[in-house]
Length: 356
Image (cartoon, rainbow, N blue to C red):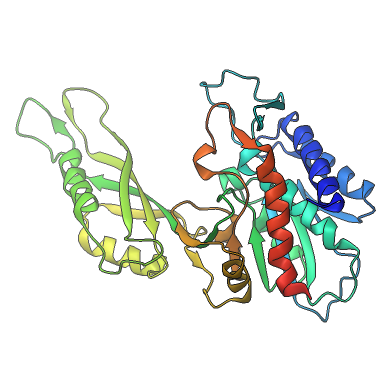
């Protein structure tokens, strides 16, 4: 690792430690936003902010050129009860940096910031670079990247920093949450009265459990539907007139949400209301120059079953970053120290193939 890359890595680890030490639960990211803003300003970068989102342009930003977005989030989930370490104490041990948000997605964020700084002062790049540290990713909130994007210059494509072991997630399943209600008729449980809404719901839930959509994605596999919440009844001797249940639907890139809803409504009796249609499935073509650059660097590509802010972007994006998705939201979360340096180096090499 050369001196320039080592300095970037050391600064990135220092920034990550500050972020870990500062609680930044979704909707409460104002303090980490200030830390990121101050870090960039200290490097001579002019920053912009909107709510708890921080962004900046490279020094020689030229509106006549296409633009690449570098994005990751600085909010975290709340620490789960399995923690044995202080989640807000950044601790290095045996090559690991422990702390809440270290892996998801602090390591990605500081690596992308470092990559932006590496190219910040360089003139005559083929593309503009835009760095955005966004809020509310963990809750798919409206005041994160979704509210920020309309305020940014036109973006041609982007990299979304999430822990992928530095492999390329080129497709991502969409998330469709359905609120379903089966309707019956109330009656006394001891007599042949009423029309039990639970039994009606059970028939529909069995359909959700067993139905298989025809189109199977080579990247994302089949569609998946799971009943995850059920609520009915008020007391033991009353046949319930209503049964509500929630269905988690993971949609591959071969179906639109409208097609999926059409199939569901044709096959179930319950009323079906989509809670949100924002988190749609996404994909970036293998032929895209960004993906080809990654392949040339020995990166593998795959389809991701999890959703991210990638789902809210209406331009091609690659999800990629240091760290391991399996560690996200786990007790005693950590990232390997060398993963950060490797992340910076890989991002720099990936962009190098496009910027010159």
